[in-house]
Amino acid sequence: MEVSKKRHIAKTITWRIIASVTTFILAYVFFKEDPEAISKASGVAIAESLIKMLLYYFHERFWYKSNFGLKGRKSDHGR
Image (cartoon, rainbow, N blue to C red; front, side):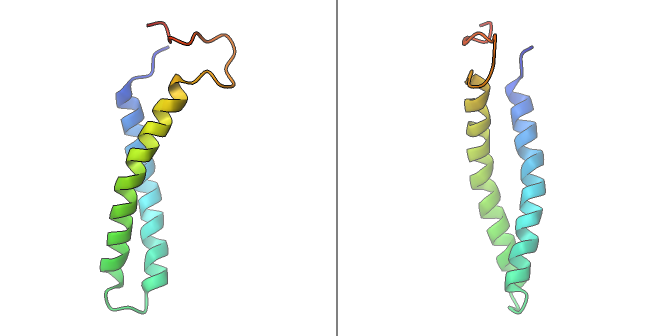
């Protein structure tokens, strides 16, 4: 079974939506007394989302290529 890079990208994006909404809510709670709370929470969520999407993608690719904890899997993934 081959897992495409598109699948990793789709997983990255859907996870980031969930995580970024959580970050926005948390940041809004911290800034709620500030008149710019929505703007600040949005900025935090956007910055966090972009950075962590990139990190997650490479993390996912690393683990896909790794044989750590797998039995009977060839290191070249059949390529």
